[in-house]
Length: 322
Image 1 (cartoon, rainbow, N blue to C red):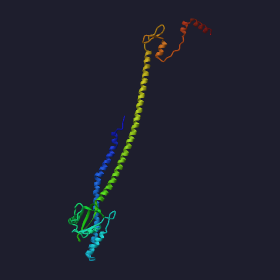
Image 2 (image 1 turned 90 degrees about the vertical axis):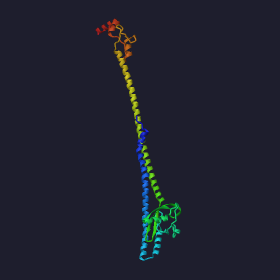
Image 3 (image 1 turned 135 degrees about the horizontal axis):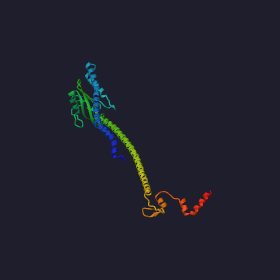
């Protein structure tokens, strides 16, 4: 008899569950970290490309000054004001700023009070002298990335991690740059993570549902098989009882036949039969006890002649006259 055990249930759900766990492990162990790195690389590439826009504006006005169309001071002022108005991003609040190599603040759209000030000793909440770091970065390679803490766009009360790209404009020794907030990347990764979590849960629930369905089907088939086995066992038991009963009946019949077919002591005169206990029984009584035969009594012609001679003679005369 087969029973649907816990081991069988585990066999049904082990493979899909293992595949689900491997999927989740791959997603959160490899895919998400890789996605975070790729997303950050994309953000860095984006701000580098956007900074090229501001750099092109500086180049345009520098050429106008070189050609004598406008003075260099006018060119610098016009370029700074045009860059001041540049915005990008989903909410249109991401911006550009300009410092020089001293470093003095040339232009900042959200911190105009810093313009004209020397920021060599200006530090973020962690004590990092970010503007001095900008100067060191561009002095080496002409461009680079610098992480630091800064206000969230135009909100001075909200300080957040930021990664900025800075690039040197050599003709004027200006540094122009823009940045990406690391929290934006974290929010994007969180959004992707939630989607993956919901997807993984949906897959896991689907697998559990299908496994439960398969198990339910298996249990149903097991119950049917069990019922069939019980019915077969019952039929087998009944058949054995029937065969035993018929065998016993046949054995009894054979025993009776053997009794009747054996050597029977019978009286030569009265024809009584002696049984195995030593009693003499009328022949008809003995046969009735040891077989299914029944008797009806009559008198044969020979016995009539012996027992009733007169009746026998009268019968013979009637036969002759007839």
